[in-house]
Image (cartoon, rainbow, N blue to C red; front, side, top):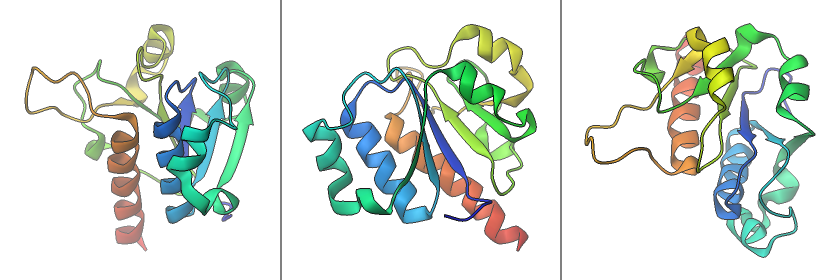
Amino acid sequence: MKVDALHIVLVEPEIPPNTGSIARLCGATDSVLDLVHPLGFSTDNKHLKRAGLDYWPHVNIKHWQSFDEFLNSQDERRLFFLTTKVDRPYYQASFSPGDCLIFGRETKGLPEEILALYKDRCYTIPMMNSHIRSLNLAMSAGIVLYEALRQLQSAS
């Protein structure tokens, strides 16, 4: 793993196939997958393993016992929170190597108090159809991660 790898942070993920797909994404992009507990499933779940296929040995995964533990170990300037509760689009963020792209639970998103505390670091993926609340977690992670990678490639 590169020291300046991007991080996908999943806070209390609930759906195994999403986490498995994101693990595969992280492996393919040499990004780190940070899993913030409690998880809504066992890491030996067959759906989790199936979604990640045989790529698990190529994924750098870090486990955190709580969101507080994760936040307390980070430089807040490196944190980007993705939520449906703001209007600032993700492509207005300026990403740097080592940044953390943070996503909340599939059913509830990130805690309101965290969004309020880091309101200047919150971004969204714009929805063109107001009847659709959000995209699938794995798809959202891929969209934002590849924008960050695009920016980093353009800067080098």
